[in-house]
Image (cartoon, rainbow, N blue to C red; front, side, top):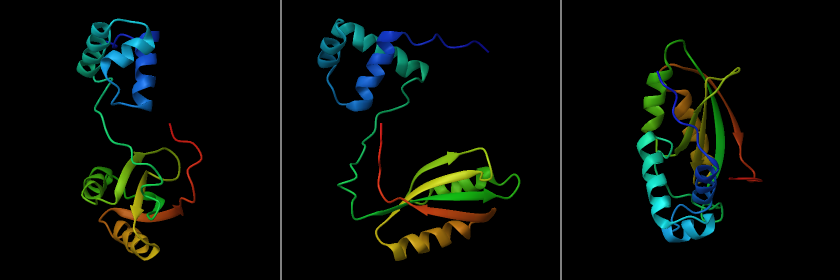
Length: 147
C-alpha cells in the first residue's frame, strides 16, 4: 500500500481556513493564502479526490442548541459486538458523534436531548442495545474550546 503524498504548508493553511468557515468562496481563500483562485480550486479537488477532505458540514453553535442537554456516553461493548452497536447507534438521531476509543471503554457517543428526562431515556435506550455491557455518562456543562 502506498502512502499518500503529504500535505504542504498551503494545503494545511487551506484546511485551517475551511475549518473556520467552509463556505468561503475560492476567491476569498486564494486572496487570504496569496495564491491564484485556480490553485485553490485544484488543491480542493485533489484533497477531495484523495479523501483528505471527506465532506463539508454545518456546525451548529452552542447558542442555537442551548436548550439541549448534551452528554458523553461511554460504552463497554461485548466482544465482537462493536459493529452491531455502531449500526444501532447510527440509527439514533440524538447521537451526534460516535468515537471508537482505547482504554476501559470501547465507544463514546456524544448525544443531545431536549431535557434531562429525555437524556435519561436515551441513555437507557443505549444501555439496552444488544451487545452493550455497560454505559457511563457525563453531562456536558459547557464547551471551553471547539476548533
